Image (tube, rainbow, N blue to C red; front, side):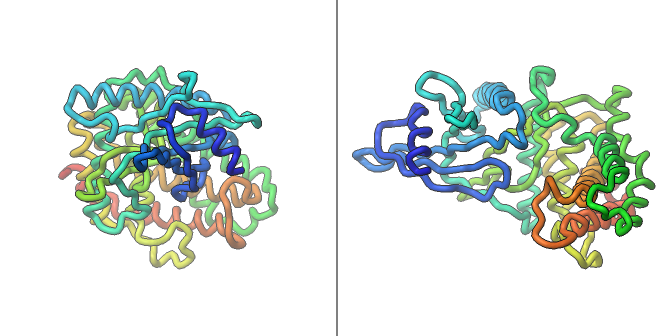
Length: 365
């Protein structure tokens, strides 16, 4: 395996020197390694090497094409605004024959990025201030991509954030009852069915022309923002594999679902689940500051719906996977996906209780 990794790394246009390769990060999708080049006078550079997961991304070449287009556009924007393109967006390293990726003997796609030095990533937003910084970074990404031609991007995972489609997939799972678990989830099924009309709110607004289709990140967790190691400021949005056409409210909502829940994603004691309005307000403030007027008034009004629907959507996906026999999400105990679904549904219910407060926060921000 070590020899294979060295052979793949040497396909890229690296400085001269000895290569050291080690696993890096804790991502769940792609295989990630840090490559260090050691020259005669010390380190000659560090890089990130990744194998793209072709089970998740069925057309990995389209993922690479999206990243090429988006990062090229961001570099131009950063040059125009006095930013640092080498530090504030990902930079693909070309192969020795000028390609943006390479295939190994098994047909697996590999890519390489420059390593962005003096940055850190955090898995959890421990404080409102940190959550606000991540909101600012994702809002800034939205503003920077405002003029990008959305139609030029591939949909790397079709219907990834499409709540009515996720509801349809849940109903399919209910009808099949593949794992014979339907009898134990009557309350959860009823919860989703009572909110079927809600699932259409954002997609109906798009269809009616009330909100635009935008370039969206679609995986807006805190650990997809690199933070400056000294100042803590958001430097660069990473993990661009799911960048594709989407809705700003879904990007906003995914962060809230993840970062403003007071409990773990799979918490069994649902009394611990609450929406932290302090965290909600911090992220909203940062996100809208970063977006800098790029969003329309209607998009801003619908941000609470993004939070509710991303939470509901995730819960429906967990519930569907529980009914299907735990085929998509990894589980570590009996009923793990059901626990996850119940936590998401509890958070939806807490949001519904505090809906007026959420709307007030958005209006003030």
